[in-house]
Amino acid sequence: MRKLLTAFGALLLAVSLPVTGTAASAPQFSDVPASKHFAEAVYELAGRNIIGGYPDGTFKPGNPITRGQAAAIIAKMLDLDTNQVKNPGFKDVSTKNGYYKAIAALAEKEIIGGYEDGRFGPNDPIKRGQMASILVKAFDLPRYVTDENPFKDVKNYSYVSHSQNILIIYHLGITTGTSPTTFSPNASITRGQAAKLLKATEESKPQMKILQPSEYGWKRIEWFNDEEKNPGIFKAALVTGRKTPAGYTGDRLQIVPLKEGTGTLSFGEGSIYFPDETNSKKYYVHVKKTDGEWSVTLEETDEHLPTAVSLDMTLEQTKQVEQVSLATMEGKPINGNVAFKHCKKFAHDYLCIDIDKSGQYIATVRFKNGRESRYGIEAKQKTAHFYYSFQTLQERTTHSVDLSNNDDYSLKPGHKIGTVIIPKGSEQIAVVTREKGTNIFRAEAKKSGTFQVEFPDDRVLAYPGDDFLYFEGVSIQVEQLGTILHVTARPYIHDYMK
Image 1: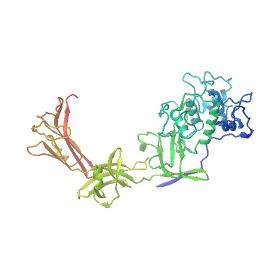
Image 2: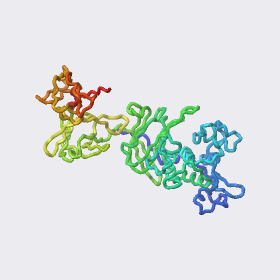
Image 3: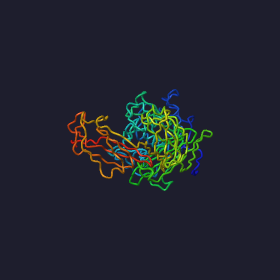
Image 4: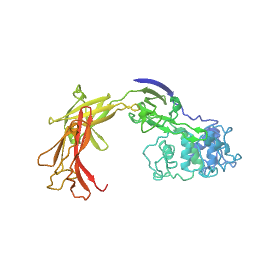
């Protein structure tokens, strides 16, 4: 079932930027010739009365820009109210400081912060890493980070100061490194570089849609999943709020369109580890571009998509498969010729078929030599997911273990097991027999359960020799999925060091 929830028109940039002049009306600085890479940015921002020069007609583009100066410039660019501000409490920023209002306005928006010792450092040169974080927060740039990181001096971990914000502005094309492999996060920024960074950020911020928990009657958005079926259509990122004296600032989910098409998105509040037990939403995300403007439509749904279930077998076995048929667990035929393919997950080989409905099934795999193998399949719906979850079990109703010739541990050569105790009632789980005159034990499955066949008089040293590992018996385990049984018989080893 689908529900067309919301159709958004062209997405607008969230930041409204004042334009009070043009580069043509800006003052001409004697030390900023047009040939400089930052000249266009300097003159445009100067024309908008966002930055200014010195009384001698210079801009001094090579001088470091301070944290206070950066705060004043950004407050102007964001058109923040600097009259009605709360004192941020920085011990080195009094109300008489020329940058006080701008610093207070940005601090209230949590765009900037101070040092651990309670200072803001208004006269400190701003560093490249600090500037990256300010730009991301000030312009609310998308918070997703790709795995690509060319910088040796930037660690892509959220707990490393400024690192993820550096990679955000790098991947948006706002800036490059100081070399192909270094960003120099602790290097100071000049006035010319700052002007170019600010203008580039304005121009590079992608259009996006913001979802907030209050829209759904929630307090938080704790998790999201934008990868189930999303061939590069959009990218989502969660901006987590913070606890402040005024209360929790609130979470928001950013949706950044990348190309036309349809993808899937689910998100919710509560535990990220158990999303199906929380309030959640599930959408098809339709992205279109018209006359250079993106539009996004969120279509709510409770549908599940056909999902590949993997049947465990080797690559050579998958090459020998001739036909796969599907039936209900009761044996009623569903499809006598199911499409199949070889697939690989976590470096392991499987045979994969698609299931498009929840329930229990039996898949019968027929090989070219006429042999057949059956698999039990259980497909379950997951409320917060588009794909089904699966449990599979290959049928094996009998299994043998030879204690004299076992892969891991064997009996000492020539030893024969004496007394064997099979627990009373265990025949309801599996019937265990021993081949006469051997140490081979065979189990025939009846129903799910486990038990141990014990050797009370034969705690025999395992081989190859170990002074503390002894055979205690044979462990029998029967797994069951519907009518499909899978039995395993293995040595029961006891470690006397434990």
